[in-house]
Length: 501
Image 1 (tube, one colour):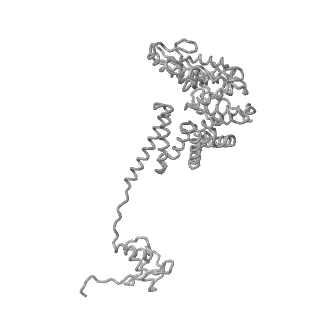
Image 2 (image 1 turned 90 degrees about the horizontal axis):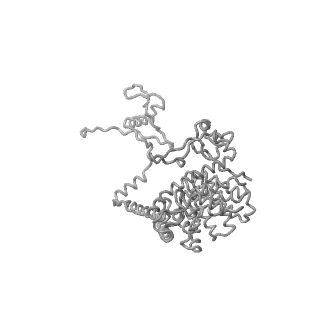
Image 3 (image 1 turned 180 degrees about the horizontal axis):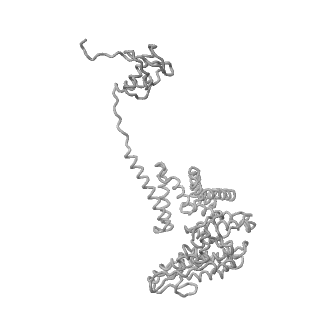
């Protein structure tokens, strides 16, 4: 059984340079606590100077109005603590603190605007108190949904019994919707910090890994860490919980998240291989008309597009879209994703024929209508659909303009003598020497052919001119006898230009 990867830092502890995920020879860890470094110099400087801290740790000086960073922490002062709790747990603690500060800071603008708009300042719906540290990134509106981040963490911990998991780690209690943005990532970091030290076969640790994958995959700088968390989640399921998953649905769901991480990192070959496995499993388990199979088709076509298999991608999308429209309806999310994928496959970045682009535009008109009915005109999904439709329409208009500008040229009327001349040139005998030569070279050629025809000389011998003087043969001598044995005739005698003899 494969070893479960650990969520250790993927950057240098001193200069924060990203480290290769599988490049062990280029990593220089600490001998005591295994903290990774990119070079021996960074490891030496971290022990004496102290590591760099992110700006989330900075405090605002009220007198000067500038952010003041705390003092550097030398590695030798915390090396013992890291070795005691473990590198993975220490990293989870640091990242949870950083993301918590980032979540509070990103929500401060909305809290300030709500304080001005509402009659009374917003308060936490858990402790019923106000103050700093409030967050709200869910579907709550008005004066509801505000809560302290620490209150959300304590509330989720109290509702997590043994060998089970609480959905309060990523869902709002009021509106029952999932948190988004930095709030969701901060709660996921705290969840992983809480259950990171549990055994590998503990359900809470496995669900903490699952909770951490999705918010990490939404942040650009966290893509490598999201891939490591997705691999750890899949390995945990296959090693410790395979007996509780007889149908393989949990393993398949973990593979879907791993496909998403591979795709965002540009690893299309690995994503395509996993997508083929997921599609084959759903086809054998549920058949071609099940929602899970149709979603697997969507994931598979993304991998096919990354690897350049456009023909198979278009065929699968067209068949799956017809099934989804008939079984699920045009307004379903699965149908919506398949429709947009088929439109993208038909459009081909503007290089498709006109009839394919027209079909893509007609599909996007339906997508825009469904997005406006479901999410509203100002939603991000609706904006993306409208932008895609306008781009396809612009490509069609540009194609029509180019076709109109390239009009066929007016054909010139052929005269009878032109036709005869063309026939004469077509039936003419091939020229012996197609290279153009100068007049002097042509004169030497005819002279040499004349001497050779009379038997006065052979190739390579000197010839005698009219005055009896011997001279070498001309320097420029093209071949006199071709492959068919043809010898050029002697030049005609020169005629006097005088008309009167």
